[in-house]
Structure formats: C-alpha cells, structure tokens
Length: 357
Image 1 (cartoon, rainbow, N blue to C red):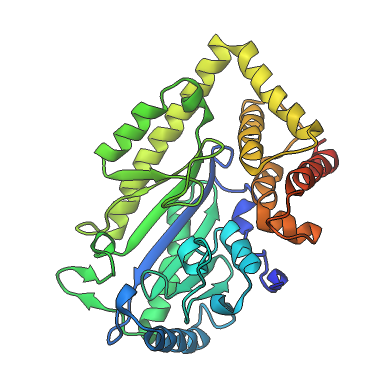
Image 2: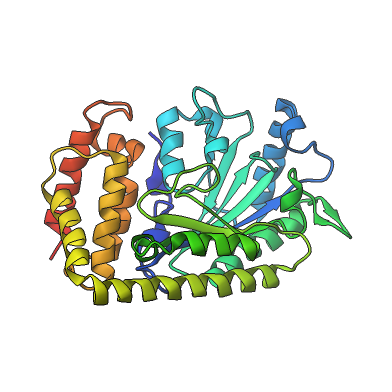
C-alpha cells in the first residue's frame, strides 16, 4: 500500500474545517491546465510522448522552489486499490487513475504532491495543477497554485498563444486554463425545494454544477460542486470574482432556507437530523450512499445547533474514510468485500462514540 504518511497532512488538510463558512462549504479547489510546447496534446499522444512529458515535468519539479520536495506517485505502477484511495481523497481524477471499468492508467500518468498543491501529469492535458483549501477560500487557494504555476513556467515551455492564451486539449479550457470550484452542502435548498431554481440560475450566469467527484459524478448527500464553465475571454481575477459573488449568493440562499425550515417546520427538521444521527450511531449495516445521506442530515443538525458536541471536522473525515478504498485499507479488506456495509457501520459507530462529546 502506498505510504501516505510521506505527506505532511496525508493530502487531506482541506478536511480540517478551519476555513471560512466551513459548515456549508467543505472545500475550495483551483485547477490550472497547462501543456508543453513541442509535445503532442491529449488523446493523440502516444506512450513515448507521455513518458517524455513525465520526465520533463519530474526534472522541472526537482529543480523547482515550490515542488523540490514533492512526493511522486506513478499511477501506472500502483494497484487499483491504491489509485482509488488517491481518487477518494480528491487528489487525482477518475480518468488519470484509470478507474473506469477494468482500464489501467496510461504510461506516464503521475501525481506530484507538495503541501497543499499537486500536479496531475498526463491527464487530459500534460499538467493539471491543483490546490484545495478548507472552506470558502478562493483567493488563498489560487495564490498557492499560481505560485507553483509561475515557478514551473520558468522551467518548462508552456504552450501559449498571444490571442487565445494557454492552449489546452479541450477548447473550453483554453485562455486562463483556470477551473475554480467549491464543494458546497445545500440541504436547506433541497428540503425547501428551491434547489432547482438555484441550479438553473447558475447555468444562466456561466457556472455549472457537478457531484461530489466533479464531472460525471452523481450528487450524493446534498453536496454540489459549483464551478466556472468557460476559461476563455476573462482574466483569472475576473473568473474568481464572478464565481465568488455567485457562491456568496448561494450561501446566503442556503442560510435563508435553513432559517425558514427552523421557523416553519422545527419539529420535522429536528426529527430528520436526530433520526439520521440515530441511524448512524446504531445501524449495523450501511451502504456508502446511505451513509452520505445520513451524514448530510447530521451535518444540517450541527449547522443549525440542533446537534451539539459533534464537530464538522469529524463529519468531514467520515465523508472520506467511509468510502470503499479507505474502509478496505483501514480494515485490511478489499474494496469489493461484501461485508463492507457491516464494517462501515461498525467504523461509523466507533468514530461517533470516541469523538462525540
């Protein structure tokens, strides 16, 4: 099994619930897409092309001030369970990890990690620089990734066009190459049936939403990933400012929805949150999806101060450590073990017994 203790925070410092609005916004993520001049982009790249890109990026990383001590994981040399573990921690995409059906990572697929910033190598683009921060922290997350981008830009020839900006495999990523997103918990809007209007409004202002793991993933536990849809024609500051304004509005709508629930249906909300807590605390078998939905109910109760003595940090950890690869690794099993639902329920009960006050 890969040694995640090599990373100061295991790559999940963004779980600590220390950031602004952390009870509603789980994390902020910044991603910059970059490609190297003189190398074939994307799907047209062969194994030799991708291997050459990894060599150049690794050499640049070693010479970089920001990535000089980075830990490197070559995904094509890892077992599926190890790759899934990195994916569950939001450190690599499903595509880079080769988790679709029985596929394998392509040669040259790798992840470099240093502190709160990582570099995915040979995903859709040659480089995907990414950084995550706890809570709603767009500017702070971008500053970290921008510093790595500038550092690597001194050492690598990024493909750039004076009119179109940074060149990418997909035209929608061209320009800044910036994709900023927040993972936000919106149970109030779901329960008041206002979520449809809010999500429809996002599309009208150039934003999009996805599930817990981004593009192609389903919404579970009332967690939505909100992000900018295009990167061309605006500066990084303009894109971040626009996303920030809209997310602040969504947070305000969610807070208003929660107040309405407390005023108009206090008994029903209290019952929902405590029922969810009771099931988590006493259930003997839990599927992953059921656990996510129950954690959503408990998280709402904690946010409304209906449930006390339980930290958002504990709930954040449960979101990650009850997923199949993490659960299997912790308990010495494989992710397809039919007894995982029973193991998951036992693990959740143990955490609630030890960490709830």
